[in-house]
Image 1 (cartoon, rainbow, N blue to C red):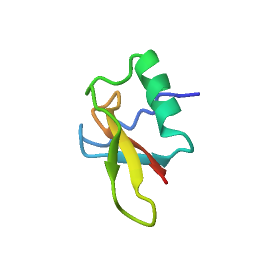
Image 2: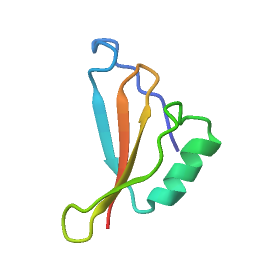
Image 3: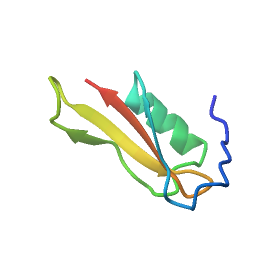
Amino acid sequence: MLGVLSMPEFDKGELHIHTDVKDIEKVYAMINQAGLNSTQDTVHFLPFWENGVKFFTIEGPNKEKVEFSQYL
C-alpha cells in the first residue's frame, strides 16, 4: 500500500527516496494504474552489479524524487 509522506522542512526537490522492490514491472504497473507517474518515466536498465538493475523514478507530492529499483 502506498501512503503520502509529508516533510515540510525540506525544500521542494531536495529529497530523494529510494526503495528496492522484488518485481519492478508489477510496481510500475501499480504506480501507473494509480495515476502516480506524473513524470511519465519508464523502466530503465543499467548493467551494474552482477546482473544489472532496473529502475524508474516518479515525483512525490512535495516534488521529491521517489525511485523504485530491482537488482537482478
